[in-house]
Amino acid sequence: MGFFREICRAISAEAGAGVQYTVTEGKGGYFQNVKRIAEFSPSRIVLLGKKGGVAIDGTELSLGKYYGGDAVVCGAIAQVTRLGDR
Amino acid sequence: MFKRSRLYIEGLSAYRVVDKLQRADIAVYSVRNVQKKGVSLEVARKDLEKVFAILQGSCYNVKKVQPAGWSVARERLGAKAGLIAGMTCAVAAILFAQTRVLAIEVTGSGAYYESEVLALLSENGVGWFSPLPEDPAAVSAAVFSLPRVSFCGIRNRGGVLVVEIEVNDEDAALSPHPLRAPVSGEVRGLVVVRGVPLVSEGDFVDAGEILVDCRSEEGNPLIVIARAEIAVSFVREYGGTEEEARAAALLEYGEIESLRTERSESGWRVTGIAVTVADLNF
Image (cartoon, rainbow over all chains, first blue to last red; front, side, top):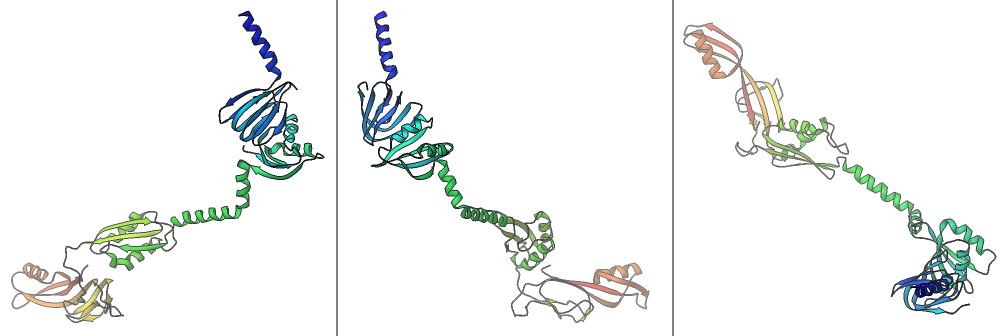
């Protein structure tokens, strides 16, 4: 149990600085801890966090809402790729 | 959604504007790539001034600002204010006209009473473009006073006041006949509901003379509805007692004015003015 807790703590520590997301297949996704947008097009959106970022590939992509570090990506998301530390 | 504006921003990597605005604590909605060097996005209308302040002096051009969400409807309604005002006035005029009499129809088997019905309605303040009758029962009661009327219904049908009159058909079928004097004498009273009167009160007429004609001035046949009272003086002798003589005279002449009796050689001489009533379809 102690080892598991240590792993979780380590994962949280890493994930806390990066972009966290929840994606609904074919609908869109909700992304947190977004610092800036590195790339924006209908087929690819790159969101960068404090550490690392995510690349979102799909079709007819757009930003439903972007505020306070939270971004809603609308469209058909085909793939989310985590990018390395910046 | 209710109070937003849509902006079209042109420039290299225009999407970076989104980061700028987000850092300035401005929520950005519906960000889309509309062309190679531009993005469209929506912001709250209250943040519009802030957005222009942030973008001032930058390399980005705000190409167009449009209302979004409910603001679109409000702007379009404002542009068509004249049309909306006209439509509102038209609806109000239609609703107002519904409360007015635009036409009067007299229907039913008593439709020939049209002129009399119009006169009765006019007496009760009902005419073209007048308010609908407040108390139709009062008008119905007046119509019932017309001869042979057995039913009267008044209803409003979209601005048309429909007066339905049914008459009693138990009597002989109506046909155009003139009213003639049954006896010779003086016309004491004349009531003509329908027909062309040829005599007046006070005229002396002969038996069989036409009192009310069934032909109009244009020669059209009319159903005569009229009543006449004709007074004729008489002198008659009866046998028996005085009371029997009086009774016999009343039996023979009906209503008698100035009845007098005096003894004669053969019995009693009765004099007076007999009033004979003649009516047609009354």
